[in-house]
Length: 247
Ligand code: ZN
Image 1 (spheres, rainbow, N blue to C red):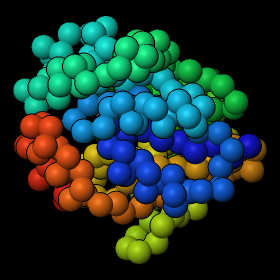
Image 2: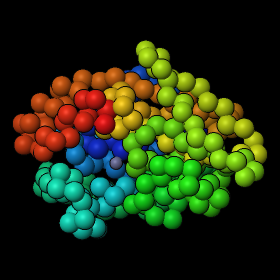
Image 3: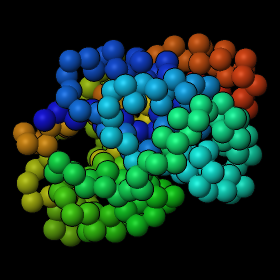
């Protein structure tokens, strides 16, 4: 089975559509590692699309705050303003969808899904030191996580942790990565809606666990169109500039 691994879509329908168009016909089931909403201008449209795809999603910290399950007071001012705006926009059905998203980690079909860290969905896994707990705790050899918006990951073999940089260079749409047996992996597909690794292209992965293959994708989209909708919605602009340069 080929899985489309999405994460951190952040209400960006333009980037999600670009990713789906590029990946058309290459996957069978879609999953999402959380942060469906927050920051971007299209919360209802993005949730509608995930529901139409039948995607299995776990919740992220923004989903939790927007649905009222967590206090948005802990967010920075930009994230808080976007969370409150998003809460007002959501249809009742889509608010219920967010409320009912399962909390990760969830292990199914031979891989695990984590939003932040294995033991704390709000923690960021930026370094080998922060990855080691998850690498030792996950019940599956391959786990996918999000939250940092940085495509890549970590591999644990024996006592050795390796940092992975699988992002396809330049005009390449994807790079192929082949997990080895006897090694545990924490893999981040990157962020669809708001990459923060210096590459503004939407990041995602397509994984075939049985044949030990993970493709890491980057697909460009019309950032200007998203910025125009954000301005029209009076969403905080501070994120716009970061977005355009992938930060
Ligand atoms: Zn996020």
